[in-house]
Length: 344
Length: 213
Image 1 (tube, rainbow over the protein chains, first blue to last red):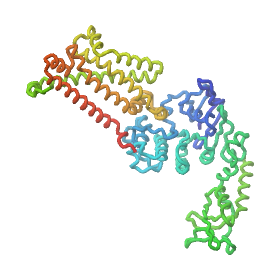
Image 2 (image 1 turned 90 degrees about the vertical axis):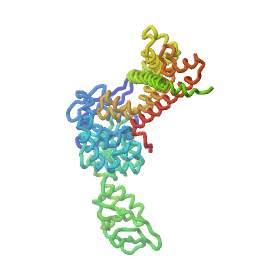
Image 3 (image 1 turned 45 degrees about the horizontal axis):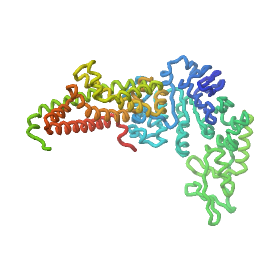
Image 4 (image 1 turned 90 degrees about the horizontal axis):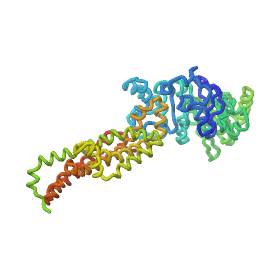
């Protein structure tokens, strides 16, 4: 667990970056710090590994005051992923990943073996290891950045807008990878971003900061979306925050019935009973079948786009299990909101 | 202007000795220059107020005419090789210091911060991150300093040293062009070969710059 107690940071030029911050970041969870630029979220992150020293207050990692520890040794025990990866351009990918193990005195062979292992963990082919960072794509560099942070198996991972510089498609992939890794590794992750959608996707808890370094609200994503503390948070979450909440819920509980027989539109299946499209006379409209793990938001989207208002449901193999109606999806969407408000 | 090839044949030993002596003077000066400018550059890079002073000082030293430097050094070190080397070293400093400072400046802040955030201590960061990344700019300075020193050694003929420069005075005094031509050609050759070697050294030391994607 990471604990901030009455932490204040004023820079020499007089600006207050962080104002009286008291915050708990739970062990094994992802805490996302969000807010517009200049709100103190990066400063907060950097105080954890003493890249920035607080003016007053205490920060504890795993119960130990960071100010009482040697800065370099503390940093070796905390993984750090920087925006645009910050890889060492003069070292091969393998040697970049091996940085902290080498600093810890593991010896070159052991450090390289571990680095090669991590290359696989983050989904990069082994031959990437011999390359230099500039020979990699932005997304690949970011993966190497994550592997480098994980190399010495630190319990805590700090991530400063790590996916800010890659295109949206790659960004989504990297987010998925991070969630998959986190399932396996259960690190205590502190993640800084200004992208609220990224925060909702990744965060177990989201801390919203306001300019001047004030923490406005810290809550799990559904609570935040259902009950923003004030107008600032509500504005920050955006006009679609109701829909964002639905992105956190799956359609598993939405009832399904048999596909309609007769009527204008027919759901056409292939031999394996996998949905292909809706057909009426000579018109065909493509179908995007949904699994139980898909979100209520995608179900809502699909039901709006469907000519019958029906959403095709499939099992893990893509075989049709039934259809859900627009009304049922709507009803569940409404329930999701009610529940989130009550739970909060 | 004809070349007396028989003179060449009779003096191969002399020419070899002078070439080696010439090269020794130049290389010693560059080596000393590098050893002096590296720590000074680190100071100039880290401590902003000293930066202008150090770079300014090296500029001022550079503006002293080369003969004057040797003459000024005479009371200190006399008519010796030491005088030659000190004089040349002073000249290399202006290029070496400036390029080393610029090289260190060119290392991206993000990369230095990454090293710090991984738990690398400042000295190790300097040696394993900053110097390697500054190397291309530093090496550009070393190349200029080397070629410049090789051409400047001849000036030390005035204090009885000067390597291949002695051939110029010899030929000039006797109104006999062959040694002069031999001196010029050998000096040029030295400069070209030394520069090529430095390019090779840099190639070996910076593997990450070879295949630019």
